[in-house]
Length: 254
Image: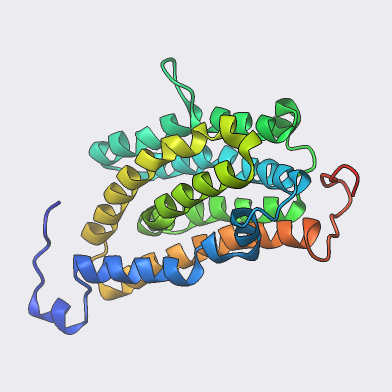
């Protein structure tokens, strides 16, 4: 990574150093990342039933399915061939190629492990309306805001590895029948840190002013809010008060 020299005016304006910017971004994760959401806490404590895990896997699939679309939008906006070559990896990671399965197929394997039908999951049958609204807003961010902000919105990957490691440990402990469907998380243990390293370097090198740095930080806040909102919808529909809207997935026997 090249280190951008700071002139006196930039320093006076409070432009964050690389370490300072990374600390600010990590602070967003500590405050807003969905590892603290009550639905995830219930998951990690083994307090979700099979139906609630099915609802989570189904709704999360909608998010997973738009990730390569989101990354394709960002890819199409990049004017630098080196940027496009680096970002292309993300699309392949999720869509797969002739040599390997992608994250979407791995997530369907997890959904099947919960007892769901893969084709129904793929079709989005029963997905919560609030899930769709939240996920579609992520696409709006990467379409309508600057490329800098679009890239910065991906930086939940800075803190996702810890959550993934915890989730795998707790799922094996509390839901051993899901163990055969955890390939998605195994792959993300290496993919997410690699992606985060590239993205944070890009944000640092291309945020030329403190105002642009603040836009990048806000984009990450907004992404965290989108992830949180998805879990709010699940909690309301399937935990408390337990009111799934018309057309939504229904837990068998509930």
